[in-house]
Image (cartoon, rainbow, N blue to C red; front, side):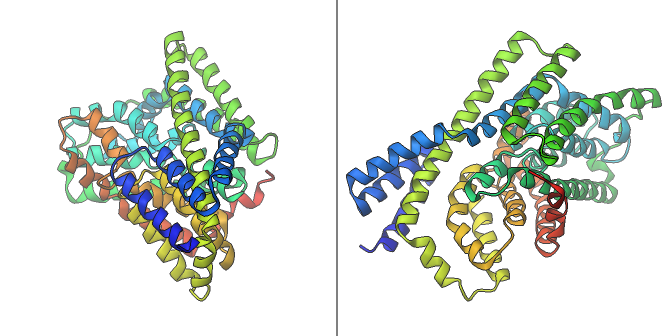
Length: 432
């Protein structure tokens, strides 16, 4: 068989094994290894596998992932997320749909200290769902809001997806981080507007809750200080070139621990549990990265990316981006966001270089495309996370509520494509 045909068969086998629910890290490594062996022989295949495993697990840059994943768990252990929700709730909870809007606002603020979509949805779900249930919110609206709010986590810096994207495409992680800020704020605003319109048309979806006193509102503003300190310290330090992403994540971990100790919300037990959970999540991501590197080498040896570059050479940038977006969107129905990005980006990266598309803009678009997958069936990991918090709500009701918000995500995706300055303006001031 020709190398190109081997590459196509390899992708097909990979997809079949994924549909059979096999772990994606081992599937990519297995298919990649067998493919390399078929093309180059056992000796070269074994060398590729050994070098890829060693080089990935000894790569200093991948320490960025560990640091920011740990930072998110430490922020959770410090109780910052629940305090954020209470603060936003006190200010806008008395509006129609105000508790749902407060959930989106708290998710956006918490995303400035947490890089994970699932972690954001889980923490805010625990804080927000009992409140919305207490005041008679429609379950479709309340659970869908929590699932969609979690999707802000990877867009507003820091972001695990953007860290991996930066490593794969050799793009500045600092620039990618800050590039997601304006689109993230716009998306959160659109979510809130969408909730306001729905509750205006049908007030029963989100009844108003009692108004908090001005004293409680002003006192609650102190809860914002924690996130502001972490955001300015970590993202600000990276933007102005005081340190790199790995050091920034480590400083964020230390900052979250200090805040937890100062607030007296961090105990030895919660510290150990957060460290354990964070390390497990980071190791899972590192295994997925290693598997994707092995598979990426196989695809490169098959010459498939280069053949695709020749095929799309006459495509307009708009048509090519549309096709890539469709692949991402459909893939998100079946594959989680991180594996999806690691599977597709190495293949389309040469195509983007061929047409000269801005990789920072595409990075923001990748996050938006991947995050539609976490709230749509059948994978929808954010939806499954919310289901564990609200077991009495039918799964399809949560999917229905979350899918409404895909409208806003598609609008922001189009805005970023047609107005790339939304993603490139802030990075233009970044020195790292």
